[in-house]
Length: 301
Ligand code: HSE
Image (tube, rainbow, N blue to C red):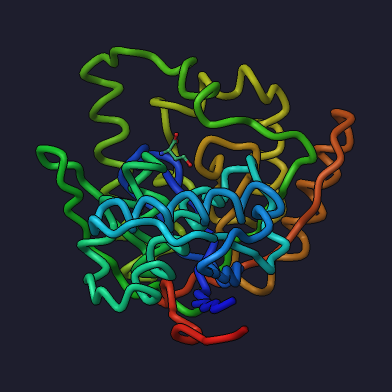
């Protein structure tokens, strides 16, 4: 049997950052190593949801390239990234799958050519763009084309993550969102999204309390996570600059400096426990590093 593999390292991501619904996302120093393997005979199926999504994305790249699927195609993953917690795991898997398949085909597509294939499967450009390119990303859908710009994140800002044990499937939490906003609500979010990018660029973290404010998606999503705003308040009281629901939840992300990271995590964990919620915690750096090919197409038999 002839068999080849390609491995890719792709970051977790945190989308929305409060006011930037579907428009802002950032790559985290929390990664998944995904290996896609092809063979001329059937291979064992992928084990688990991340590997499954990566294998589907790899197959989509073959179809996009007009190349017949190999007799066997599978994927495996090494990571402790959680699924369904608002950390962009689906985007991470899809980006990994298309990149690995492209390496196996030697097709040489650019990341911008591969991005639409990943987002067609995944749908959330504000996760897929930082997963592919790294950085703090502004993402705009312009007539079905994702126009995006990545800023290098500052090295003195962290995200303290409270990762509840319950998941909030994004499609369910999106169904709760309002179809319409008033002009005042639109202005509220437009100003804050712009302020958030400017404040991070200028290291004006004192502005993040205001800049993470949102009236577009978090109030509706709080219906699925009643303790959310109390946990936000606990993090701010413990010195977090600003707090938001990561992606479609359930992770809560607090912008902190190193000096306040542990206090913010402790305060969030305590507030969650007061509502009977168990949660994991983690402090992440923001990273400019996006998806990386770890090795090309290894042969085996
Ligand atoms: N912007 C998307 C949402 C991100 O909030 O639904 C999903 O991770």
